[in-house]
Length: 622
Image (cartoon, rainbow, N blue to C red; front, side):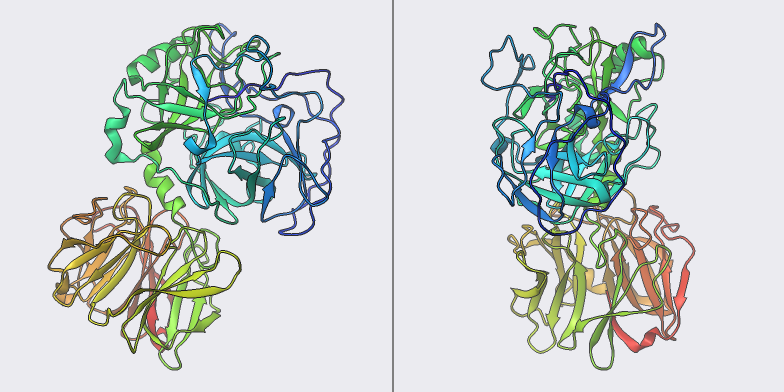
């Protein structure tokens, strides 16, 4: 829910922006300092004027002047404390602004009516987005966000743009702060953990004028050790039934007054039941013009605005990017509301608008599980030499693979190798099976260093015909492990996200008829991982994912005839378009990439791309 806006005082002249510079990935943190001067307020951006010219659509984002500043230079992960030392950054309020003092009376610092304080323990997935708007090492609170995986944050697309609709480089100038319910810069700020943003994804077609497709995902340099919240998908239609109880969270303005509102020093929450699309459209189109509210892309929640802080419940500037939660899932992302020149939110008769997350789940989920060896969001190919057992990496180019290879290690002791980020820490792991004992290992990066270690996850799987790591097949947002016995029974081992697994689930029989069973990611565009299987005679089948642990795949649909290939790999999304791709090698050693199209039919792959010849020197592809 929205926090209050910072109270404006006399502003010094805006400075000339400092030269842009990259944050060092590591290094000494200098003594904290306040930003010398701030730009004029840019809290509310008027995107669409109403017919009367007095009411506008306003986003719930903060741009520099209405932010909180963290003075530091450096990258990686660090602890954030309220008391600064020579090596710790301090959280301070920029000159000319204040955060509501929690000790003040309600008359001085009104809370969101109907809202209540939310402890960090009740919403451990809430994070704050910080951005270096002036490229001078000063990081401002800009928006809220939701931790949907240890290294992934779901937020609003407009949070990653400036007031003119220009996309900002969050991979270079962004940070995320987690682990605290206290707002950055408040008087009673608790410790938290801040981490660099390495890259960002914005839904294609985002329009800063209409605020449609307002959804984005940030990838963090390192995982945050806090609970995550799953996103709603097409199976969660019941959560959008009008009247469904939902709750929104945030640090935004606690008063609608654009001049006197202040940011809440602590995380707040408010109950906002889901409304019918027709009700939303009638109210919002009536205020701002026909077509303003986009059913399917947007939803609205809560009671109509009252125009009074004493009676209304509303999100306000500062709440952008935060979640609307129902049924333990993120069903919406705080997007926009109606505002005027003097009123930032809670305009009489208006509703708060959220991005409808389930409509974008098929695009969001591939971005949540897009770990790759080079950490750029495009899957790389791992191969092992038939002679000597050395493993190599061929980097994705976005349309194929590089012509040069990089040595990864000696994998001669294993007869099976798979790529999979089993703990969702943003570092690619390997599932390996010992050639001599049949033991299966999870090779993963240690939490305290850049070294890798092997953890045994099965004692003897030498008779297992297939082992697959397609992703989350059970619908709990954690990656799972699958195997096929010598008799053709498929077992699902539900992942716990830490390299351990729950009790195995018998998920089907008859899988022994396939001579190849591969999969990593979503081939059909519904957000669920699928499998590609080949049977006798070269018939290739799509086994479409269901998201159900007891029956994770539908009956196979034949999509190809591939009797000329003798090796396959499903590395994931090689092209970076959010669709899983496939790799196949001919008996003559020619390697092809089959880009995925997202179609659950014979058109599942686009025209194949020839990678090259001579690939019969390798006997394992992953």
